Image (cartoon, rainbow, N blue to C red):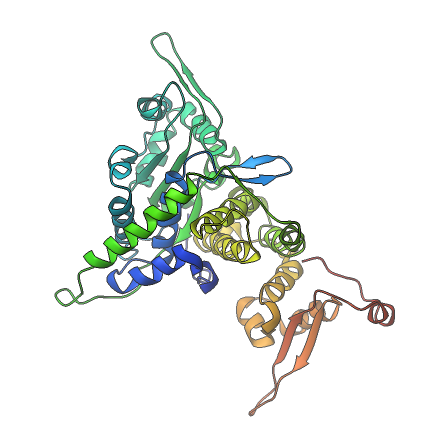
Length: 418
């Protein structure tokens, strides 16, 4: 059971980048919903609308872009429905019939029901994209335990693999399923699947939990009407989708791929390293980072990914990991990954670096001496004493990508991998 004893997740502003991030910022004055909730709903809706053709090319083939966020927060004060609601108004305004024909409120909790929903919209056996909005994820989780096939079909849908449902009375074949799901759930009920067969077996680690809370209180009678901004953003959303539907392959240039391997992948690995409880929820973190980066790229009407796309995607993955450790305290790591996480945090801070105060605030259970020992042992961290205005001066930690050969010879400290 979740006790919510850890620090509440805080979103990095980097995730609100690009056209979709700009939409979230423009909608924010009109809603009490969490910006993260609005962002992830828009990304999920976009991932559904673009269809199954666009994919990010990897060495193992093309990775589809379907996105399954789950908004986690207590009933009433989380404003989960409020966040999803205003995002869906943009989608409905922009895409018209898609919002009627391809959006399903309520995700079937049986294999037959799920397959039937996809089959009804399929053309010659090839699935049309579907966006499921499940506002009662608590009930879905409970009901789905009675049908083993729903877990199998969800896993196939996440991968875009053919779904076959055959019984003595039914024969359904759905090829190239393309599904996006937005779920709402209470923390205690999301926590209840921890350690379950569905979690460790791979069904629920396809979902992407994000913590949401009411962002503000708006005046009941004086809040401006969002109608005009919804129309404007709906038109912008439609243009993004029109572009994306003509794209088949997204490319990661060599220079971007190199940065990804040495920065984003290592940071992601460090974030999701810990114990088994954490691993079952974050196993697909890197795959999601690539998918989300692809969505940021397409939203900007590009076919080549940039480092900024991965930066934004990594910020969301980081927030997902913080959501897991906040709602499931038992999923906290055993501590063996702390050095890698600290180095990843400093590296993620970029050229501006991170102060010793910021690092200590982020890793509250690690003593200052231990933090200093970790940073001193890494040749790629530059330390600078900051000017003091009273009290002990803070230290600035900056990650240096290039290390001169003579410096390595003079200071043969072991390199800790982030």
